[in-house]
Length: 360
Image (cartoon, rainbow, N blue to C red; front, side):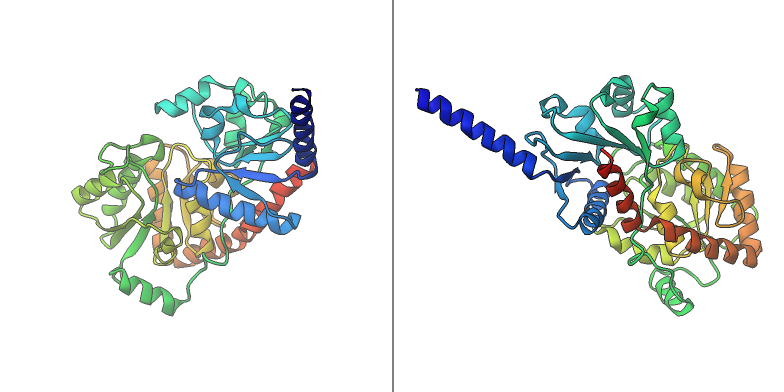
């Protein structure tokens, strides 16, 4: 009996010492989520390169001790068994976006837990100034907030030359004289047809903008990707605007769809990114956006894109109209975006995570 107790104590001490000696960084993701999965891939790969040892991706961090845990997906932190985590761990939680006016139940449940849910977190990563301000307004301590933007794979998302662009548009059946506007996001409720709009993503504002442009230009075309786009597709059909829609199983298959565009439109009421801002810029696509998320932080009016106020579909249309009728301005915004985006390579972003972790 005594030997058994002693053996248990010794084993516990050995495990505790082993944990202290083998401190690593773990990135907590959700393997079933398309977007979070790729964030985890690029951030862990970039951190591993900088730290010169593997940063491990896991969906099950609850047994770990004496480790640094980066919750790239906030949902396990908010809704998982976080009380099971040992107090010896260093905790980082990512908050991409969120607005208390969002009526969706998961968002409402998260805001009801603020700021207490971050009491155990050592740092909270936000991607933009707006997200930081929202958390500050809800009582999250300023010293816990670290702003690290989203990134983009600059080896995959590249601007095509004129020959490549012509070939891509031909393959996608986009006429040479069409001015093709992109919208590559989920903006319908649920995961079926998406006939009910997810208003936070602004599908109604997107259609209102397109309706204004339709009165001025007859050569409009829209390229859509992503799930639950039924509301937008029905709206485009009512407006008589041609469109193509494709939903991808593989993330990087989206690259030629950016490369086929003349412009990308973000009409959202709330964002933490979106990634389309960075992916579009990397492919040389001018961006017109509402003043949300990362666009509000990095777009310089008329230099690398254009911003309009939230809800201002007329302002969005006026900016697009200028870009459609002023080729030199269109090229200026394309070139400006390509220059801006060099700061957002995933390795540069991962280095910022490393800097944060080293200071914990």
